Amino acid sequence: MDQYHVIDDRMHNPKGLEVNAVLHCNLRCRSCSHLSPVMPPWFAEPEQVGRDLTRLARSYRSANVKILGGEPLLHPGLTDLIREVRESAVTDKIILATNGLLLSSADDRLWAMVDRIELSLYPAGPSPMGNCAASAAGPSVTAPISR
Ligand code: SF4
Image (cartoon, rainbow, N blue to C red):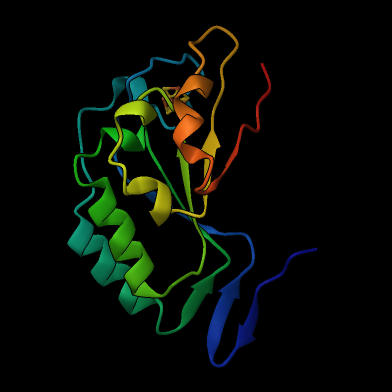
């Protein structure tokens, strides 16, 4: 079983840390666990997240940081946010969790900035898989929920 442990005076979290890039979404799933369909637009402030995680990294380290929402690709400064997470040194692995519908119009730099993209697929929703062609030389793309 994964457990927290201390290495070099820092608490290591083997399970991962989550950062909400936004709270709202471009879909309206009835069972959304983040209540995104009723959330007003809100955007995490990259510099603030960077400051918080840099401070946290003095005594804490995470196996990964998952950036999610709502739909994180709605954040106009998403690459700035990812850069801040990377520079905080709180983790070596950044995961982007997205419904994928905006991937084809995402900033090209995104693909080189994350280690993995997790696609949320919904049986009744549109498929984002065609938006992933640009990922061939980039991060791994996983779809944990099969259609
Ligand atoms: S795509 Fe995800 S975040 Fe968006 S409404 Fe559906 S469950 Fe919620």
